[in-house]
Image (tube, rainbow, N blue to C red):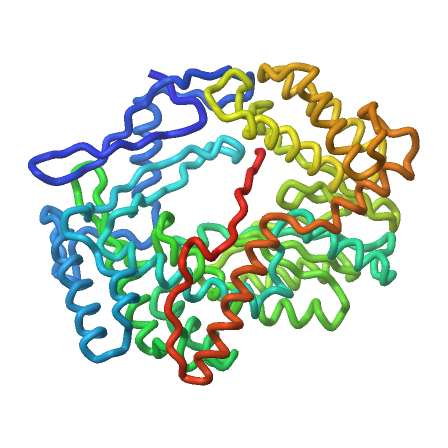
Length: 491
């Protein structure tokens, strides 16, 4: 059997308990020359080599947890006892209890599986803990919604939300004459952020974050109670792998909603010194999850020294850096061409010319949105008309390769251009750079779906914070009162 680029995991039953099996099969899809191909035996060998290297995993040990005894119901009982105790003492409301309470007939033990990362050297495996039905899942989702919007509000200046947000910051930096020929563009990534989070320290930083911004309560839940809820999510992360039970004692599960939010807040503390140093120099600093971008007009030696110091801020946090006049960040290629900023769409070397096939069983709007998203990204990211035209040529080949008709692509181009340029616009091409610059300006100033979601969450947080200060009780907003937008991402 062969696996191409992905691993899939199914739950089976073994002596009454779930365990993991990872069946490998070739996907019913087009194969490309740079696919990652591996047979089943080799994949299992890689997984076994990777698993002992994972941080914070133990079998049994100090918590009286036996690697041969299923811990599901022990965790279930702990969650039930905690939630009932908090409700009886009126620390949480009944609707909050309902959101977090696990259901006995649907809980399942989490299981571990791996996904190959073919775009990285050596094709390492990404460990994923599937915890959709764990007893702590309800608490994790509740805390994520409770805390994430607060973080979005107060850490906005150091958070890059998408490629358009990054381009806005770069253009402001250029307009203010900070970009000069010697300006370096720098990126670095945090290695294994989720699985390296120190558990107790991360929870202490969570409380520090809330206190710094004036939160004694969030939705009338005291912050010490929030810490108790977060503690059980982090500490009771147990899962099964190859018929053995494990507990994660460092970090959080990749697959648990609250892990990402806790990682954000941990990084808020970690990056403070670096942010201050760059801010006083009018440089850009922005983070997208565990990837960081910044600019610097210092020497290369000074930048390396600064990052070496940052690499020693915390023993669990290590950096992988890239510094130059041209660097990729997210899906944007950024270049400093002798003091002139240029951006374009960045495609990873391992990226495949593959999108939703036109012949697949999807509603028509999916195909329209897929093409529109690619066109819109090409316009927004391309600094010059020639860059845009090259990206559109590549885009057309990709869509033709996936069964889209030339007429369909032509219609989507015409529709977009006519909307912004002229109702009489017919041909999907530009006569001059001014038309392109105007269209790019219109699309860059229009809010993206990611930005819209951030604003919605922040607005809700502001309302809740004001009512917490007045000691009012706010019931949750009904689903039909929220306006949501669907997002489509093309890789």
